[in-house]
Image (cartoon, rainbow, N blue to C red):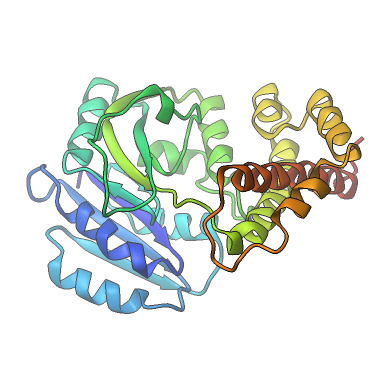
Length: 302
């Protein structure tokens, strides 16, 4: 088996059916690839979606059901089951194009030992997709971003896979990327290995979730910095003195409170205006840096 497409899911049944169908509709010959899905303790209609997908699968389709344990643990379970010489990672909110596997393999043929990073186009709906043309505005500088990345399975296993100490949101794939980079594994970018990445416009009832997620990401950022005390980590996480000082000043100036006042009293499930969206993102950003300081103190940072 040349390639394993590996993805994990948690309560995304509304998207998962389309995601799996796209994985099955690839242009490569039969026997080239398999799909390995880890169901990380979903409580929605995921089981029914998986049952229907089994009947439609055009390639080997393996499903691992496990209690909810977080993304790092789920990724490792999927990698352990993978039979492919290379593993392509996507997420359960990613719709791949028909030439997706073909393009990853094309890049690996030129660079057999490399990580291959693909392009991602953010969309608000899978029912209204733009022309699949990548542009620089969709660029991500992440060395290893599991929305769309492939790697030789042997290289991934050599660095120990995903660190399951990352039990909250964020940075578990960046950690793997840093370990691969420091182990000498190089990366290349293929803008034709495209996916659509579901990014719905935030709604009023999602603001607090944005804040909670930002705080969780700050805690794992401190965890990442402890594992990799390197300038790349500092820049990625904002875990350096100038950034912390800037955002401390922003908080002292009362910006988060003004953002909260703007967002108070919004109708339930309402779509945020541009001003409200900016306020929500600013609130989440300052919550991130506030939690970063708390987590640094808890970890004994200066």
